[in-house]
Image 1: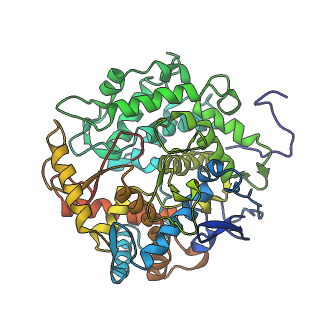
Image 2: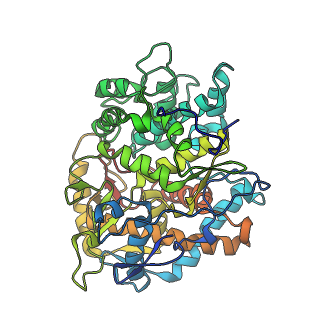
Length: 502
């Protein structure tokens, strides 16, 4: 049977067990330890649709294959839990924890959510790239879809959006405080994530990522392999006077993506990200019900394994296998004597951001349901983490403040780097940042429970984690940064970015 051949009627139509932690090691358990009763972060499935219980694959056994385990979605929450246990006892290496501020943090998040969505909390979209494209209230993705002729069927429309969203997310590392983008279509100026979203959309429509002049609205490996720093700089309007952080890193990420897309099993003969749709729908684990049901770990494997070659080779490795966004952390248990893998905390922030973002077009256009999406965690990045610092829940210890301020002053001497509203600065692999990110994952889970309690939402009416990220913590972290540091709008702790993590 051909790679994307039509399957039997047992496959879906598309018209229009986890583990627990014990002293840093594993023992089998029945249910994944997730908040909110396991409600899925992304779903627009009609309530009338009956979604059967789906058994999820077990995570890899870290004692047999530690690299596979640390690359799995299961490992993110489970490993971060060990750092979170120390946070509850105020035993972190780099931060003091004031649990009396936890309620204040939750109340602030609730105030943001109520301000923007009360009383219609069900209208809160799941966290994802789609909303960034709609900056300024303009439904750019809907307009993009409407611009395509009716001969472009719903599956190809979905493929095109996957193409766009994947490239846009990979470009969406921190842009820095100085960069801005002037839309060629509206003339309006945008910054940060929304600016990169608009810029990537306009490059997509112009055919920057396509090797076929007659098919500009696609992304393919041939075009990405040819991508030059100068081309991306022009598309992002990056200059010495309008610098964007990590331009070379972003370009390298996309050119390596071009190489990764040569995997025909996942991305087809045309080497397009969107062809993963065909792979997912024809996968043996995908089930037909009232809607197509794709297992979240199947999508995760496509992104983690299929894109493994795009991440810098200098990242943490186990047995010669690159682990991506995974880092040693001094707060991990050291007794009993730990195996090398047990000192590592994985985050896979960009892969999670991709997963959240790619589920949206597949759900909205094809009504695909993703079983196991409750395995996803809150994103361990500087907006969610900055919220915890700016509300006083976390405070960086004095020795680390001194070290971080010295690094900031040194970095400020470089052209284009911020030199006002001084805050501690660290590289992404610094133990301060790794610990900060780990407790961010843990506190986001705990905030979800408290936020739903304060909102009076229970059962099926409760917010999902992805909804809280979208309407509360990420937005709240950004707004606090804007108030606390109005000139730079930077987080309370800066991370020196290479354009491939944040």
